[in-house]
Length: 277
Image (tube, rainbow, N blue to C red; front, side, top):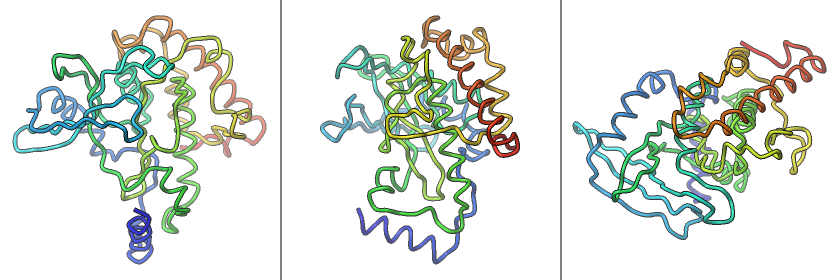
């Protein structure tokens, strides 16, 4: 694996093919989201394999689906309750995807509810990635020269803002994926949408983070405006039955905390250094 990743990085250096700013799913893929949601719901199951004892807490299934000559893999899970002492739910996977669409984040792969082995569960389109953030860090792979560091940082700040909004207490380097063209993809949101006081009194990613300061240092103006415009009715209409009213209200509390933090950063560093178009 180390050799593969090292060769991959070297290839990028030699070819100079890293030009896309890392932060979003490409516009053409965003436009196709409805198509992929339908694919997940109607695709014919032609293969299945359960992920067991590979560091996957929820023991999900990798399903191979086919429709009209198109074959793709997808990750299906139906975790519910407290299997490892933490509240886990497949419903949060779908809610996270719907929230991603609602705020225009475009970093969570298409996800839909389907039945597998007679059980309800979430099914997420498999995003082909070159490595996880953990592998990048372990192998000390720097951001390629063709991609400005600021673009990588912007993607990281977006990740923090989104996880703050949905109260994702299980974000770690293994569930942040990096594609071949150095885009950041966020997966695994089954431990999100907390509504206890711990997750409504404070945000997760702040200067007081347990691993050291992790700020939302820069965010797109349009993204902040999307968050500012969130209402109970809007969120309920997007997530449906997948979140309770208490969980939705907790999102709205965290919305205000995020806006307050962004106001603080603007006053501290100047608007043009914090918000960008």
